[in-house]
Length: 269
Image (tube, rainbow, N blue to C red; front, side):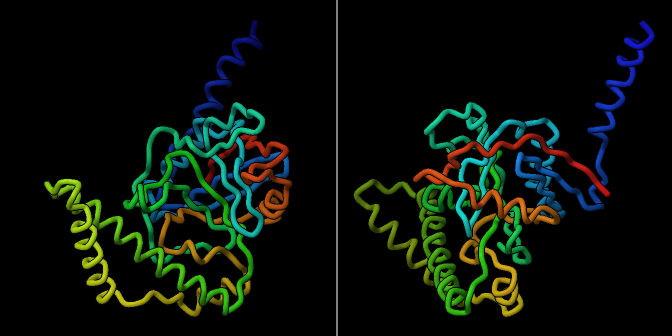
């Protein structure tokens, strides 16, 4: 009987310790555990909406048993779709964002180097605000880039920015306009004029030299820069990401053998 009462007392104590308040003035870390090993990330303090959302999900066990459902070697390892817990063979996961999004927190100081923790999101055409899928996230594996490849990535970034501005301005104009469908062309023309005016002020984006050096020596996915939220970075477990990125996948980039998140742990040092 004494043992039972002791268990009843100690159990809640451990549970309370596990979810003790965090000191947000200090770095917060999360360890994601898989059969291939553990990956530990540090969450950025200047992306608090994403940081707090990820902490809440991890502490609630939302990722336990969920798959990394999309794996592309040299690019990303993506997971977090709640539906993937069903692990149905042949199913293309990635369509469930948990039923909500997180407002974009795109910071100029963060970029998509190897080990970046980034959001997953719908494309700019339907999501010009670039809000993040509530539960999904990616580890950037990336690869080392040559200067020629970085020049191409730079062109791609500028093209993505141009198209994003168009969809953003079009949505804003559509929200204010009472034009009928027949005048859709005029609305788009106005949006493009706004794009060109904006770009003439902003100038062409160029990847900074210090960032180029990171992409040349460490690697990453530079074409993503500026288009999504980077809210943390890997501090331990790069080898685990590399092993996950090398698994066999089907034509939809889903691992042939399920890559399961066993658990997550939030902590501070």
